[in-house]
Image (cartoon, rainbow, N blue to C red; front, side, top):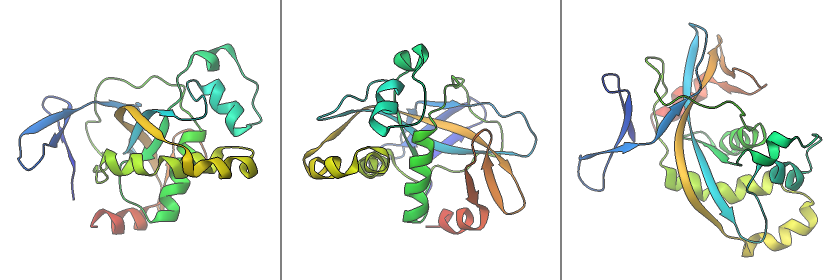
Length: 195
């Protein structure tokens, strides 16, 4: 089911409200692509508060995930976001893609516009994306032995969300992220689009 509509005239995203078809604007941005063979996939970028831990900045995230990165001054200023696909995938692919997009936090500032063409449909509501955040958190947090004991008591409270369209390069059998080694099977996307 299509949940957001992209208007090529006003360059805004709209969603149906409640039981009516009165449109409500969705905050949406785009990371610009630079090739003709680009498909834009929608992701929910979610700012959330996690009880029992500090995850305000990218530096906080690097420490929590124990990533092999040197913490820079920019990381201490850049806000941390959870990323979730805004389209349906099989459960394993959905979790994997959410984890990869969250771990590879984009430092690029998205533009306040929408893609003119080749934008994949938004088929997953932000409410369902929020329900997956604890799974995303459990995928990167360390040490897991200690963390898993606390996980059932932890609460993730969403504060703000934004729809962001990310460019993926169109290959014969898959779509690949414009910057990171992330690939999505095109047949699976087509199959899941009808659900």
